[in-house]
Each structure stands twice: as structure tokens, then as C-alpha cells.
Image (cartoon, rainbow, N blue to C red; front, side, top):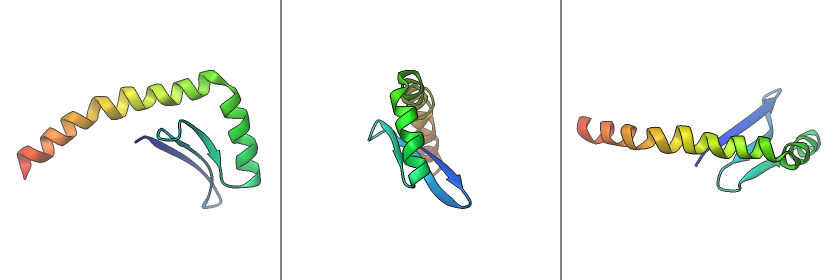
Length: 70
């Protein structure tokens, strides 16, 4: 799962979660940002692509390295 969180004054205001597939706001301002980001298809598609390029690409090599060292 890929999670990207945004904070303001140590308070999580906004999060993208790959399991949900969209941005979720946790504050009033975060909800406004989430609505704006979710309405822009290119931003949401970019976040989903980040999961595929980073998480899925590197997870197998990290997993293999962990097994060979333990």
C-alpha cells in the first residue's frame, strides 16, 4: 500500500491512500484540497502510478534481501 500524507503544524490534513484510490481530507482545509485533487484526474493517476513504479518495483528486491540476510 502506498500512503502519502500531508501535515500542517504537526496535524495530518490530507492523505492519499492507494487502497482507497483517492485523497481524503482530515480537516476542513484538507477536505477542500482533497476535493480539488480528486477532481483532477492527472494528479490521482500520477499518485497511482507512483505506487506501481516505486512500491511494486522495489518491494520484491527488498523482500529478497531481507530473506537472504536473516
